[in-house]
View 1 (cartoon, rainbow, N blue to C red):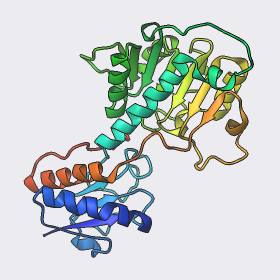
View 2: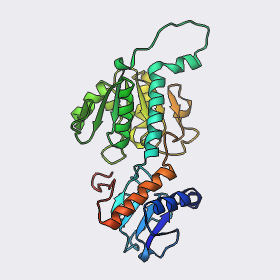
View 3: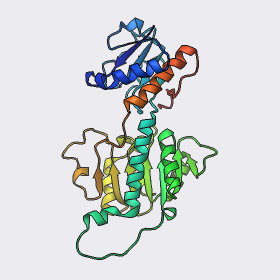
View 4: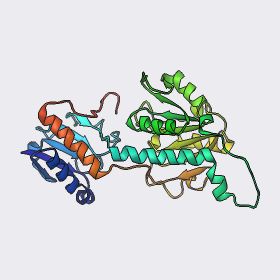
Length: 309
C-alpha cells in the first residue's frame, strides 16, 4: 500500500479526489489517498504550495513531493524540503497556455482592438502584415514556451526564443545569456514571457531591457508577475516605447483595485486565467511519477534546486 498525502486547501479536494483515484487505478497502483496520513508514514506528498504543509521535516519516509502547480517558486527554497521535488507539466495546462498565447498574439498582430473599440465612422483600410512579417519573441523555452513557439510557427510567425541556457537543434533562432537577451528583444514586435520566476529572472523586463524592444512593441505576460518591473513598464507605455501590454500575472494577486494597470489605456488585465492545471490530465502525471518512484525509475520534471525550477 502506497500512502499518498493530498496537501492542498480543503476546497481542492472534491475537484481532485476522483481524478487522482482514477489515475492511480489506471496505473495499477495500490494507493491509500488521504488528507491526514501520519507524517512519518507518508510515501508521497501531492502538494499545492498554498496548502497546509509548510514544514517537510516530519515526513521522514517521503520519497518525493509532487507539485500541483507549474510554478515552484513558493516551495523550492523551503529549507525543510529535502525530498525530491517535481513540478507539474500537465498536457491540459500546456494546451490552455497555447490557446491563450496564440489568441492574444493574433489579437495584437491583426490589430483587433482598433476595430473593436474604434467604431467612430472612419474608414481605415489598412490591412495588417502577414504573420511571416511579424516577429514574435518568447522568453522561456520550457514545455510551455516550446509549445507556444510551435503553434505560432505553424501559423507562419517569425519566431525566436531566449532562455538562460542555450538550446541546440531548435527549428527557430534561440539565444541565451545577456547578449542573447538583447538580441532577442531587438527583434521582438510581440514579446511573450513564459519564464519561471527565480532570482535571476525577477524584473527581467526593466527600464534597460524594455528600451531594447522596437518602438511600440507589445508585451504579453502569462508567465509570472515578478518578471516585470511594474513602474518601468508603465513608464515605457507612457512614452510609447511599449505599445500595449496584456498581463495575466501580477506581483500581487488579486491585482489591487487601485493599481495603475487597471486604468491605463495601454494595458489589458486578465485575472490569471491564461491556463490552469486540469485535474483529469494532471492526475495522470502524478500517477506516472508515483509509478516511476515505486519502480525505481527517474522521476519526470524534477526541479533543479540551484536553478530554482
